[in-house]
Image (cartoon, rainbow, N blue to C red; front, side, top):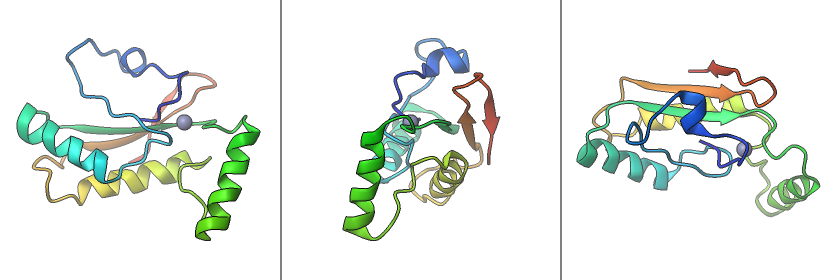
Length: 125
Ligand SMILES: [Zn+2]
């Protein structure tokens, strides 16, 4: 899940303390650190399902975000995946989880986009 401070995952999912492990980073990306955390969560703490949740309007209001993207594009020659394309980013992250052999439970991996404008949670993958 993106670390955007406007989004309270406990509230939007109707969770109670103890219901879920929640991993957050800018852009809700699934990388090695997140796969490691999921492996620990599933293998050592008994979880069996994964939800990947990104959101609309991710950093879009900030000029600094535009500068950061330009800087990354200049350095790497590629556009960072997290910005303004929540549906594509979530689909990619869900794929990464489903393909991770370290995870014993990959049959219930779902992706969502949270719309900050109206609170809708739309399933992607
Ligand atoms: Zn965000």
